[in-house]
Length: 185
Image 1 (tube, rainbow, N blue to C red):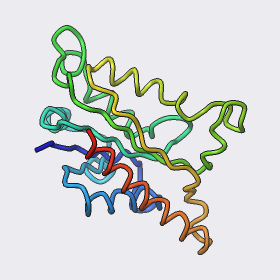
Image 2: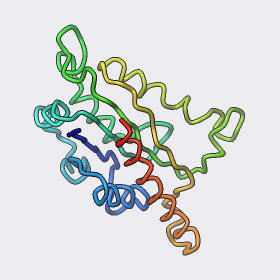
Image 3: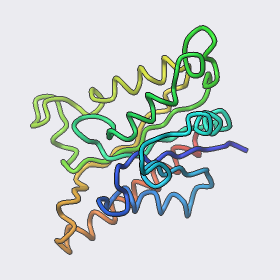
């Protein structure tokens, strides 16, 4: 049986998330996995690197779930990556612990998908913003399994009932897409 690790990198999932909270809740219902919520497990941002490395070693598929903040992963997730994926564990001549594991990225943005196009408001297609994560996977010997992305999921719209319902439906669909993608790996 495939062992799946899902890491939530939202900096404040319970208080400042709408879509990511729904996505993760739905995933827990439909996809057996180990779920790690960095914001609640490490509220002081002091990671137990050994424990996190063990989780990674035990997984066949690693999924990171996060909101797209300033064209990249949130600071909490970035710090986790910096402190857990260290030389000798994940990369370097002796860092082979993650070789062959599948790495899937699942993320949301407040801006609609159509703004992430060549020449669009954001200037580039969303794929261009993922180059650092693709290289991260490559440097660690992981297999880039792709990504699931949904835009137009702005926390700022949470007080508009019509937008809220559309965002909820989109978030639930996002979770289904993640589960299907993991199942296909």
